[in-house]
Length: 305
Image 1 (cartoon, rainbow, N blue to C red):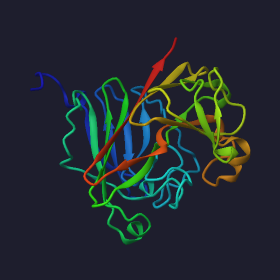
Image 2: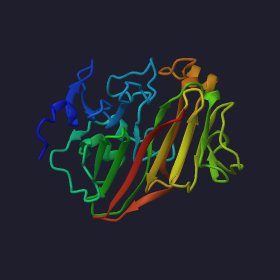
Image 3: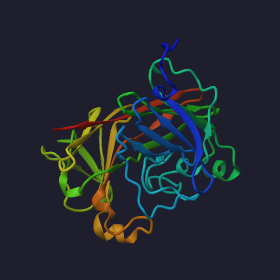
Image 4: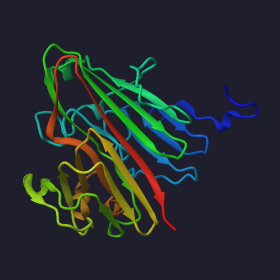
């Protein structure tokens, strides 16, 4: 039972709202006032704000938020393909489909709901167009939760409900909002092998230093440790990315020339965004009939004095 005297404002809240295009969204708020907004179009987290109202995710001012266009920013889910590594549209179809709020999701025993605002979404595809290009039966269950400390967690469960096996790749394509790309460094990827998409996925080995940025970057770091940190010196804050079931990390920034070629990204906006993604790309996940895969991404913010 709630202690007497605890007001509704001090409880986590979950509200269904609509954007300007009439697309359903879910707004999560924790008792301290932090919030997360998720669109049912793509199951995409669009906003993650601190209790002081600071936005932690980047969204382009030129982003097209009208379905079926994916929104440039937030956390699009790339499934069942990342990039152009397969026969599907770039980054797969999950980010372009309408998800449903799941009223009775499968049990998640490890989840502690104390003081958390959370929602369960599900993607089940039955439309002819998608089953023609990807003829597999699956359920994708996504739980998005906002904790009392402001941490954002995404738990994905993909179940094969088909009679034959299939494989997939996945990435949480997280756009972090940063002060300036020249003021940022990434730690946790030192000495790892990576595939460089700017050199036809050729394999290289990272040096022993933290990653800093002076030009376009588009890499998949392989078998990374479970915690990666993005330090923003100017804003004196650090994003901690903790992941389970997601061995790879994608790091992407288009830089000036490619930014100008992207119609849904402002020419100078590349300076204020950095994508660092928990992912499973190099070795696709294989599911036999009836099997389920679980992946977890936890994002937290640490402020320095």
